[in-house]
Length: 290
Image 1 (tube, rainbow, N blue to C red):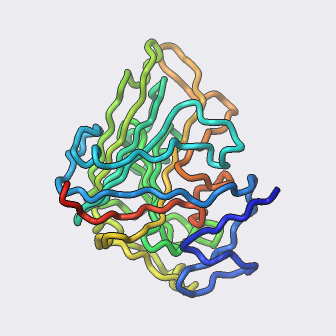
Image 2: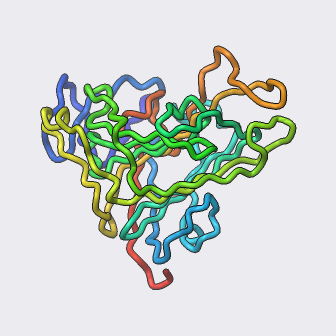
C-alpha cells in the first residue's frame, strides 16, 4: 500500500531537473527507501521570559514549560527497528536566542574528537538542522559530541541540488554545554547517558557564500532576527550512534559496521539533507505565566 503524505510548507514536488524560483522552492526528492507513513512532526517552542543557564542541565524554568518531543526513531521510519536507547529534545526561544535541550540515553558514553570543526559525526553525536524560511533551500547544521566539540556548517543548497557545505560558517555567540551521567570513555561501569543544552543567537544565522543559491533564484534564509509569535520554522534533530566494542578499559567502533541514524521526525531515507521531510517548530507567544 502506498500512503500519500502532504508536506506542508513546500510545494508538491514535480518532475524537473532544475530549481525554480517561487514562494516555496521545489526540489527533486531522491527515491525513498521506505514509504512515507505520516507527515513531518511538529514541536512547540514556548517563550522564555528568563534565559536559561547553559550548563547542560534541564533545571531552568523554561525547560519546565517546554514539552518533550516524541522519542527519536530510525531515520527511515517506524518500519525499521526501534532505537535501543532513548533520545528526545525540547525547544524554547527568546528575543535573543533559540534554545535546545536534548537527552540521550547511553550505556557507554564515548567520544574522541576535541577540536571544533572536526567531523563530529565520526563520534556518537547530536545534530541540529535549521531552515529558517522553510523554502528547502539554504540551511544550517550543528553537530556536537559528548565532549561538547562542535562541527557547524552552512549549505546554500542541499547536496542533491548542487550545494556544497561551507565549513567557514560559525555559529557566532552560541553557548553550548554537555553533562555526562556516567563515566566518559570507561567501560568498567554502566553509564546512563548525556545531555546537551544550546543557546543559538538569532544573529548567528547569517548566510554566507550564497552565489549558488542566487544563481538558482533561491531566497536567502530569514535568519539574524527573532521570529514572531506564531512563526513556523523547518527543523530536524538527529543522533548518530556507532556500535562499540571494549578495548582495555575503553571503546572503539566495531570495524565494518555502519552507524545508526535516529531522528526526531523521519526522513524516509538515509539522508538528513532532504529538508522537505524536516519537522516544524512553532514559536509560541509569551504568556502571563512566564
